[in-house]
Image 1 (cartoon, rainbow, N blue to C red):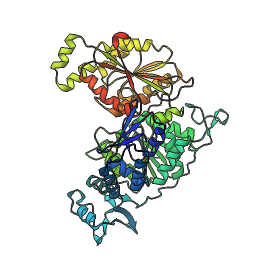
Image 2: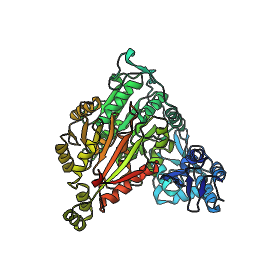
Image 3: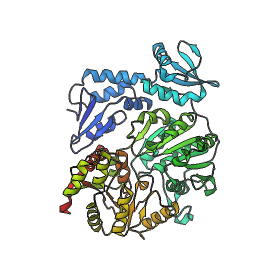
Image 4: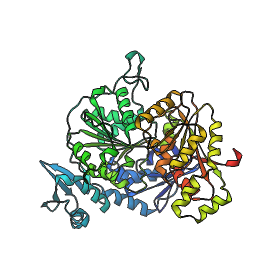
Length: 556
């Protein structure tokens, strides 16, 4: 009696308490997408994208079916086995290959090639017919064609290879200076090496050529990026969410690699440096001047050997467009979750590459590399006048009224008082609400309007303990390294964004020196859109095995 139930709608139910549950989870992880992970039964789903990811990683449909047969409790519905074979067989019927100076799309199935040629989605992306099974592809159309083929259900196996880029020596250092001390003296450094899961992620990304590594916040995605850079040993463009993240990347590269400060450039609103290792922000890359993305053109002209996309799930549309033209470069996407609220995961797959490595949050937590976390939802009942105002307002205004309820301030104050010895982040989405909280708590406020230098000063003060409480907006959602933070209090969010929930929890996930548990609170207005959206945001954490306890505000 195995721990797995395979259902006709291609969902998989895993009994967590079964002795073979962990073995089964690891066996199905390469091809099944985790949807929900409450206490007793975890739900996975077989999707086309998940099966194509598995096929791209070298798994066959026979292996997938044999795995399900091995661990299933009941006979598998025949339609599921048939669908697995047919979906996975679609990957690789078309291959992109390099033939001298030209790019060629080849097929093992003439009918598929004819279908693709007749599609409106491939118009202008295919060139001359070479044979019944071969057609040329304009060099500039490689990415756009891959996008179109995924949408048509015929994902291409891209075997056209990569240019080497301009060589540049990069190696992982043997000693790492303490955090915050840059390239400090050797006597202050400590020996280090990649953790086993980081090594596996580096190897998977390197041998796959291009693709995405999914790791929890605080698990060392930057170090994985450094490891791939060391294997590539070529000029590298790193794209990040903001200037603070760019400078943190620089500091981490100086800590963990042999790179020197003069080899690393920052390309942001504040600086325009192009060095062998250039760290650019998405914002500056997508800035238009006279209707043109001038910075995209400038950086596109460099001979990069590797492009690294930090927080790849946030890729803006112009970066997708640039990436479509960079298919001859090695590409590495880094993220804590591939969930995109706009549903463009297929474009990450086609343009950056398939998922090469994924480590569940709870697995990394069990190894002691991220902190265990307790998630709590605090529900308050709105006063009658505000409930009436919410009920009669327009939909977007209803959420704002509920999310910014004045009574949340007193609840946040009580939660802060419960953690007098902790470093606390209060996180929200509405500027007026955050300004009120900053004043009420007598705490510094960081928003998108805060100058970068002031942000860095406050983050540094928080790291040293000089400041124990910060009120922050969405600018702190991503790529901010605050290892001392152990409590986060969320007062409002970007509607139902699961990405945001994952990133906010990630702010407090770095392991604590004294082994403390992290606490993640969400303050929610009962019976309003605030509660509905909170439930949707929490879904990602449920998928990772976290559960929310719910308490009434009056019980605090």
